[in-house]
Length: 333
Ligand SMILES: NC(=O)c1ccc[n+]([C@@H]2O[C@H](COP(=O)([O-])OP(=O)(O)OC[C@H]3O[C@@H](n4cnc5c(N)ncnc54)[C@H](OP(=O)(O)O)[C@@H]3O)[C@@H](O)[C@H]2O)c1
Ligand SMILES: *[C@@H]1O[C@H](CO)[C@@H](O)[C@H](O)[C@H]1NC(C)=O
Ligand SMILES: *[C@@H]1O[C@H](CO)[C@@H](O)[C@H](O)[C@H]1NC(C)=O
Ligand SMILES: *[C@@H]1O[C@H](CO)[C@@H](O)[C@H](O)[C@H]1NC(C)=O
Image (cartoon, rainbow, N blue to C red; front, side, top):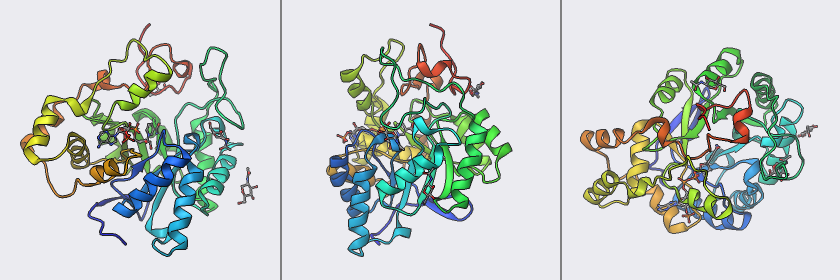
């Protein structure tokens, strides 16, 4: 196994999840052939994907190559996938996981997440869309019934651990109260401007690890721009251009991305930076040879803007906001 300077956190009862993984949202099947292969060469041992990313097939090809060559054993890599948004109901969850396992060419995933507390209407291929381009939300998502079904995926050996994504604190609590198998993880938007200290503390106290997404860059917001205009209420914020981040980076001779990632692991959350560029995949991994001082940590801690830092989702006029399980504070329009 490659020298793994990265530490790991415990998920579930006795499993370790490397504290850094490679994110793959918006990476195509072709791009992951390069990016995930590079990540494994560099020493990443944690891969984050989802049914809706439509790249599990490519990731499966890379994994098979590594397993067949004997360079990696199945138990040496931690693979996370997420239930298809269009399959988030008891009768469709297993079908979604089956399809993910087939594409990934795996017998089990290490972590299977509920992608969001809000499901969308059932559809076999692609996401169901209204003529105006809005996704068709399933207003009847039952997060408790779905959790019971996800527990069965552990019983059947298809997932070693199960967890949540985009669940708020009271939703995590409802799952904890109803669970036979506790959620091992909650994957949420979390970065220097949106640090969610109460959610992090609550999850920590209850043994639920946090994985941070949308953590270093707003370039994905830029790329949203090319497809759809960014909703008015979202003020695009670029943490890599923040003066505090830049000056701390200069002091350590590190990049802004490295400082942001280092801050997050010192904050106690796991990180899954996405890059399809092998140089940046390497850059994002080189965060174990320096440490932020208490003063630097405190400066970065002070950048939190609370809900004003939330930028991944539109909170006004979002089709998801009509759902009873919409997890974020609503904005009046
Ligand atoms: N559960 C959820 O609902 C959810 C939502 C969003 C994301 N996620 C997961 O979290 C992962 C990370 O989130 P994300 O992809 O939204 O955002 P991110 O990792 O913060 O940022 C990715 C963007 O930053 C660029 N980038 C990466 N490393 C860089 C560096 N060192 N310097 C400059 N630019 C860099 C990438 O471009 P290049 O590829 O060109 O390098 C890409 O455009 C996702 O890939 C996905 O696996 C989950
Ligand atoms: C999922 O796959 C298993 C075999 O691994 C099969 O028995 C089961 O019927 C499948 N379930 C669905 C809902 O497709
Ligand atoms: C899940 O989601 C994708 C994209 O939304 C879709 O194309 C795929 O066929 C879906 N089905 C399953 C069972 O995962
Ligand atoms: C979490 O989401 C639920 C469902 O929308 C909402 O009722 C609740 O107020 C939210 N809780 C927090 C802490 O934001």
